Length: 115
Length: 116
Image (cartoon, rainbow over all chains, first blue to last red; front, side):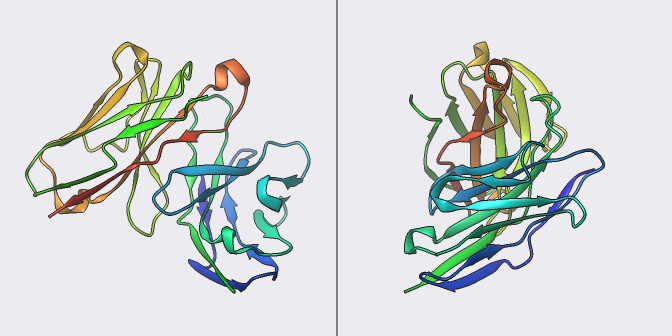
């Protein structure tokens, strides 16, 4: 079975500060990992994905994440927070051998950016 | 290209009433998903369609929830009768893995259901 843990249900950072959102996964097969962002009253939007190629993945809006197999982690970072980054962030895992495979979402981390 | 459309955006009903949600996926997307997102939690898959066939409905409470995808395009999700614990955002998503090899799911804006 696959699962995702996101440490910290709420994270606050100052504008211009480093953003670090933590994600740890559990998977019995090589995982495919995703970060999605959800703005208020909107659906989820893909930020980036790891699909067994490069371990450092760059996404939209200046975000990146690094896959660390030894730590079973896929933490999301951004060097400098912007007010527009305030949103809910979800880490997700799947085996993605076929499109039939489920995507399992973590509980989410709410990011606040303080001016 | 147009995104995933959902309606209504908001719905308030009393417990034991019925409600239906509609989803129109991105054109050409064979796979369609319905998720339930309870406040403060991540989305939970309720049902997955491949064209007009059900691939996974293991977490769908079948005594009260039903879903269909006629002609492999639009889909409706119904709850009858609703319970207080059904209050959540219902998200629809679609994917075109077979055509593009992309694992990305495209989400609609969701329907926020409040059961009183």
